[in-house]
Image (cartoon, rainbow, N blue to C red; front, side):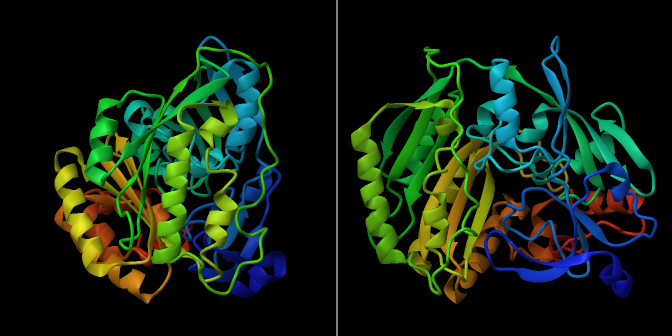
Length: 445
């Protein structure tokens, strides 16, 4: 079978976004539907923009079907504000189109080149999951292709099991081809971003709870224990009452880190991150409330992302995102702080968001608090993350599979009550297990 793949498909070198997993495998960029319909049942996986931190869109001897050519807006139903799009359309293209109609999709993850199909497979979330839920909460239906049944429309009322398993299902239920999304009226062309000082993680949690229904709500914190650990900024944002422009400012978006020559070693460490993030915190606080155009307000990291990720060097970084039950948030933060001070990992930044949603299968959703940690990839980080895994399990919290390239089957199995139910659905949909990735193999899915 591998010989046949070499005959028909090119080979491409793929790297996970965190740069910790790399391999060469087979690659196709289909531009018409018939290219999805393989006559032979070969291992394959769909790929969108390729921004998954973990290797969920490629695997050894797996044909990667990159869906970026499926990027059209197909239909708009004005009365219900539902737009039907192909799965390879990016958030930026959708936002630019909807802006002209004074509409927008309420869940905007961190990078505008992410595709709609990727957002569904990853169960992506936006700037305030407590108010808006996650991406899949605004999906009406999905058109799914699988060799065993061809194409079918799945929704909450039709093939509900397949729909729920596809949302946050890591692309393992088949290839998402079309999606119906529910849009909202666009309140304004700009956003008012209001930074608030937080002296500790618990302080930030209190501030966020007091502002839970704002349009934008999250916090960032200094991660190094060397200086000012836990001090941070809570970003509170709301749509401006002004409508002062008819144009959406869309800057030229560079590829993250791959456009840059990476240093052979990390420039982020406990000293550099302490100094840089302490300065950034002071600068943001001094600037105070600021009005931003819609694009800059929804994607605040866009002008700094290349520098941030480049400073991790060619060896990459590790990210861990955890969702803690709402009634255990303060206790977890205290135990997390103790663990960080004891282990002193090379931790650059922490981010926090309030969450609201339903836990289902392997989906990163629920009611509570998400905590994200960005760390330099090294042996001490891996030791720290093993201890963090034990803490997550003890709190019956869940990790975000798409964000962590080294999660084990043991951890996922213990954290997700729906792990075996998800596996059973995959067996029913895909008995020959055609759809595979490095992540699915590692987690025995």
